[in-house]
Image (cartoon, rainbow over all chains, first blue to last red; front, side, top):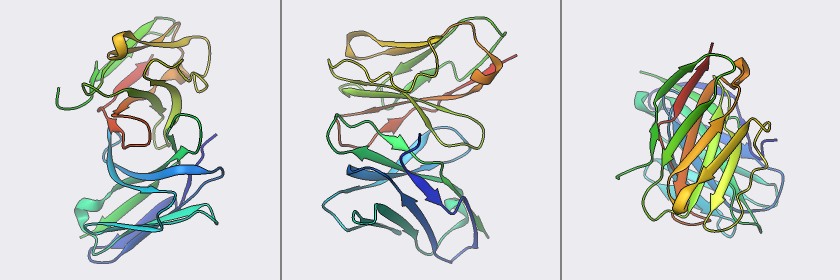
Amino acid sequence: SQQGEEDPQALSIQEGENATMNCSYKTSINNLQWYRQNSGRGLVHLILIRSNEREKHSGRLRVTLDTSKKSSSLLITASRAADTASYFCATDPGGGYGKLTFGQGTILTVHP
Amino acid sequence: GAGVSQSPSNKVTEKGKDVELRCDPISGHTALYWYRQSLGQGLEFLIYFQGNSAPDKSGLPSDRFSAERTGGSVSTLTIQRTQQEDSAVYLCASSLATRTEAFFGQGTRLTVV
């Protein structure tokens, strides 16, 4: 079963608007990661946030983590048509040895 | 190499045949993952190798699926007696260690006809 669940499943916005995607998970984590996928092939890592962090920024990306609610959000500011892609969260569980488990993803469409 | 390399990029096979999918991870990466992605779906975990530890095979969907990693580097995913439901993109990823980002290959698109 998938650890992370993203919502919404699909998001359609205009260029320049902000896009927010959410991820919920069930078990404790060591870190949570966000990835982007274009055209259904390889994924590209965007950002990693550790369980003792609450917020992280990278360029136009802002990720928050609330371990009490077992949830994370990815905010893309000032979106561009080139941001059109699928976005996945992946959880790295506490304990064990770090198996990454992915959610179903959010399909983001940014209209020019 | 510069990134994770998977071969072949595309594979069409007849139902009942065996297939082998290859993954060359980034040199020095100790962790290697295999995932499967059906059209429009999320990533389904298949198997995870970490250093010399026993692999986590908990995601393999049936005993027709197996994987090995030789010398801590190249990995091969083998599917025996392929079925139409095996059609998907098979993605390989590697990471330098646990708790770090994973780097993905471009995947192998398997079509069973």
